[in-house]
Length: 405
Length: 172
Image (cartoon, rainbow over all chains, first blue to last red; front, side):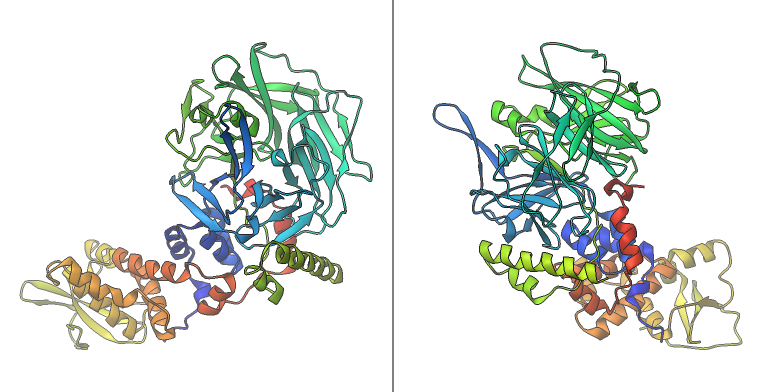
C-alpha cells in the first residue's frame, strides 16, 4: 500500500482545499505548516478590508466624536473578492482602537492613557509592544509602518499622523518614541509614508518628498525635486499617497471637492524620475491596480484570481477626519477610479459598517511559526493586564533567542 | 459490488456484457477489475482514453492500489445515473467520507484524493477535498501538523528570505 504522506499532497489538490476554507485565519494557519503549504496559501489568502473600531457618532448638538467599542473582542475583515465578512476573535483588542499596520499586522492602541501600543498579528496572536502613545496628540489617528515583520529584531518602526502629520521613530524594545527632525523645511506635516528600498519616505500635503534616516536622531531630509505643477487648484482638498509599482516610487494625489461633501472626484499619478529629480505624470498603470490607504497603499498585478480591475485606483474611506465631517455620506468614499475613462464607480454603498475608517488588510505570511509556549497559551484566557505581561516575556524571550542564534 | 476480480487473462480486455462494453483496469499491485465503460468514464482520464480508442487492452492504473481502486469503483457505481433513487440517499452514503478524525478514515481519504486526482474524477475530488477542508477548520498550526503528521521544514535561511519579502511580492 502506498505511503500516506500528507506533506506530499499535490499543489493542485492543496489549491482546491484552501479555496474551500472561507475563513482567512484558517488559510493563514495552513500557510505556517510547511514550506509547500505556505507557497499555496500565499496565493489563496484574500485581500481584505479591515474595519477599524474608531467609531464615529454625532451627539445631540450635531457635533461628531470618535470612540472605541470598548467591549469588542474581535475584528471584522471583508473579503474584497467575495464581499463576505469574517469576524476574528481577538481578546487582545478589548478596550483598544486598532488599525492595520505593515506585513499583515495590526496596530492596537489602548483607549486609556497612557495609550499603550502593540503590534498584533491577528491570526497567530503574536504581540510586540511599542512605546506608549502618551506624547501623541491624537492617539486614535495614529498609524504605524514597519520595515519588516515586527518579529524581526532589526525591525524599524515609523509612526505617522499622531502628531497631526508629524513623524516619530522607534525600534521594538525602545522606552519611548523619538521625534523625527525636519531639516530645510517648514512643511513638516506629512500625509503619507512608505518603506521603499530600505528607507522610509514621507510626502507632505504640498507634494514635498522626505527621506528619513533612522539614526540616533532621526532626520527627514527634503529631496531636491522640481515641484509638481498642479493640474487642478483651489477649492479642493488634496491628499497625497506614496506607493511602489514595479520597483518605482509613485505619488498619487486624491482630490476631494470641498463644496459637494468632500466627494473624491479625480486622481493624479506621478512617478519619481531619480535622475532628472522630478515627478513625471503617469497616464496609465497598465495591467496593475493600486489600492490606496493611509500608510498602507499597495500596487498589484491584476490576475483572474483577484477581483480587481486593471488600470484602476481603488480608494477607501481611510481618514477619520473625513468621517468626522461627513458622517452621513460615506458611500461616496469607497470605490475605484478608472485611469482610462476617468470615471469613478462606488463600491459597497449599502454597507452599514462605514461608521469607522477602513484599512486595506493584506495578510502577508511573512512570519515563521514557532510552537507556542505555555505563556502564550494562557494569554488567550487572561485579561488585559496578563496580556501585556506575557507578551513582554515573549518579546524578551524572542530577542534573547535571536541573539543566541 | 460488481467488481469481482475476474482475471480473464486470455481476453483482450475489451469484452461486452449485453450491449455494455466492459473495461479492464489493473491496479498498481496487480489486481484486475472489470468495469462497465459507462461507469468508468466518470473518470475524465479514462474517458479520454476511450474517446481516443486507447482503452482496448488492460488499462494500468498506476499509483492506485487495488484496495483504493475498489473504493473508487464503488463510488462510480453509486454515482451512476439511476443507481441511487434519490439525492438524499446519495448524500447519506457520501457522508461516510465527511469526517476523517480516525487515522484509518484519514488514510482512506488520502488514497482516494490521490486516485481522484490521477484519474480526474471531479465528484470524488470535490467530496474528499471538502472533508479535508472541514478537518482543517478551526485547527491551530500545531494541531494540523499533528493531525496530518507533517514536519515543519522551515529553516533559518528561508526565514531570512521571508523577512526581506515585501507584502506585495505575493501577487503574481
